[in-house]
Image (cartoon, rainbow, N blue to C red):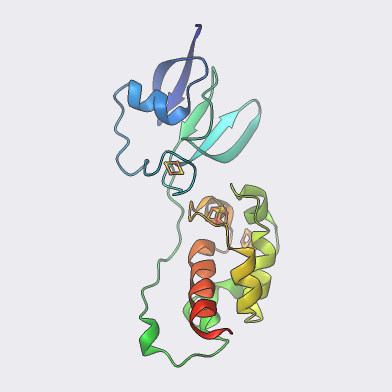
Length: 176
Ligand code: SF4
Ligand code: SF4
Ligand code: FES
C-alpha cells in the first residue's frame, strides 16, 4: 500500500493511503485528547479545518480520508458558551433571544450553512430562532452533532449548536 504525507497542527506525518485523518494521528502517536470521542461521526469532537486542493473547509477527522499534501488544523471557534438552569426561567417564546441575543447580529451570509458538517440549513435555523419559532429551530437542528464548524465561520460569533440545543430542550418540555 502506498504512503502519503500530510500536515496536522504544523507537524508532518506519514500514513498509509486510505486511513482517516484521526487514525493517522493515532498511528503517529499524536495527542488526540480533546479531538476524539465516538470515532463514528456523531459526537463532533474531531472537527478540524482542512486545506486541500485549493479549498478550505471544516470536516470530521474520524470520517475523512487523509490525502497527500493535506493541511489539517484544529481551531477553536470564538463563541460564548452560556450556562442556564431552565427551571429558573418562566417559559416564553423569547427565551432563545434572551439567552443568545447575538442571533440578531446575523448578517445572513450563509457561511454557517455552507460549513455545516451535517448538511443543516443553519442560516434558516437562526432566522427562525429570531422569531422564537421553537418547533422550526428544533426540527432544523435535529441532526446537529455540536461539532461547532458553523461557528468557525460565523462573523456574528453565534453559538449555533447551543441555540439548537436550547430549542430542542424547550420544545421537549413545553411544546405539545
Ligand atoms: S449546525 Fe451542528 S452539526 Fe452543523 S456545523 Fe453547526 S454544530 Fe456542526
Ligand atoms: S454564519 Fe452567522 S452571520 Fe452568517 S448566516 Fe450564519 S448565523 Fe448568520
Ligand atoms: S470522533 Fe466523534 S465525530 Fe469524530
